[in-house]
Image 1 (cartoon, rainbow, N blue to C red):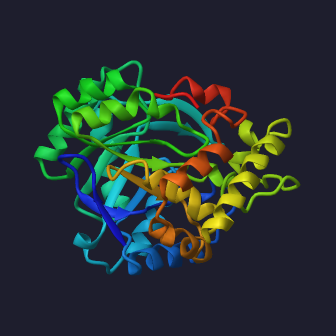
Image 2 (cartoon, rainbow, N blue to C red; image 1 turned 180 degrees about the horizontal axis):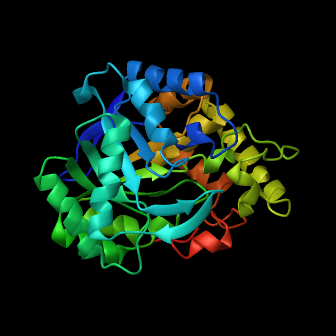
Length: 331
């Protein structure tokens, strides 16, 4: 297992890390026992970074992780937790809440659900436009000083917000979508992170399964699967996007790896300051993903990947239109 340090001030964690969102219904019904077994298999394989959000199925994901982590040495893994997304029954989304008093309230609930005495990296999931980032980060800093949080993280914010937050409390890493088909971070955000000594945890490295090599043109998202609302999976875009995957498959076959492994390896190859998160929901997918960082990409390999999936080649935004305005970077 490769280990990478998140920025100048963050923890040293496994690469890849495990993203747990899909274990709580984001991509349709998940198997609870298989999810728990997958988390435990990841830990046994040397994965030390586990990412979740307190709003993933309204606490379900944190409770699931609590069960999966029970009995493990707390020093053997790092928990990254996002907070602040509001929801109602249904669910219906109600924006973000970054008020200092809300930060501490969200944190108290997460500590209780997870059954731990601290969170390793705590981050607002999105920017609350009604609350200056300095106030949100100031509350997290108080929790760091009190010992309930170890490091400050950010998620899906722009370069200016990163600078403002980092001036209040050193930021360990920015969590943001980054993949062969989502590269907007390269223009301004990634250079800003490197200037300030901040790491990146990259989610969506397989484009929510679109560039995993396992999605097919005739497949449709099932009940409760958020990909049914994703522009990139829509009928008018999916055939074009899967043609990119087939071009990528030819590169993968020549390299002797799977499409998913090649896509993960590409993200990891963009810098040692980047930790890919894999959203494996089953042990089978985890087993495929973990060897990805053993795939060493030569300059010729990278050129072949770029030819197969050129910058900006994917069709469709990475989120539905209603969510795009809350993102710190575009496609």
